[in-house]
Length: 174
Image (cartoon, rainbow, N blue to C red; front, top):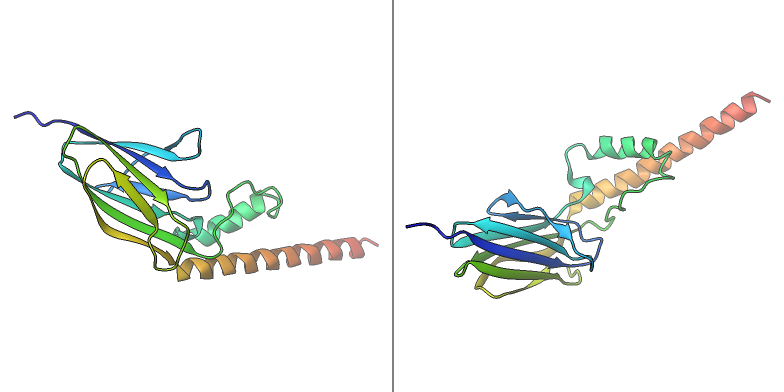
């Protein structure tokens, strides 16, 4: 018996600052922005069930976060020309996991991000196939908040050192 290739079209409707990682059965799904700012992706599978996971991604959650922040601070001329998206200082994070039953060859799934409430639901899901919610919560990541505070302190200290060094160079030449 030949297995039928099934397709799941996924749309994540959210604001432009909602950076997320989407995986289907542990495999990252490439997302593209449409003209309305929503992210869309497609999953092709032979299985009858797919586990969809949506997690927020922040640059302060990586293993080399301090080194990369320091590097970008220097490259962007002490933060003046920093073109990266600002990190979320409040440490808001989202973790959602859904089990989607694919009972037809083509299926659609739409996730709409809800306003942040601590411990509340992170997104609302509508689909034309059965969906079981395994996890759907918004929470505050304490480690990310601490790291954001460390970055702000580091930038303040580096600016203070820069001002003192500049003032010392100017007054020593007089």
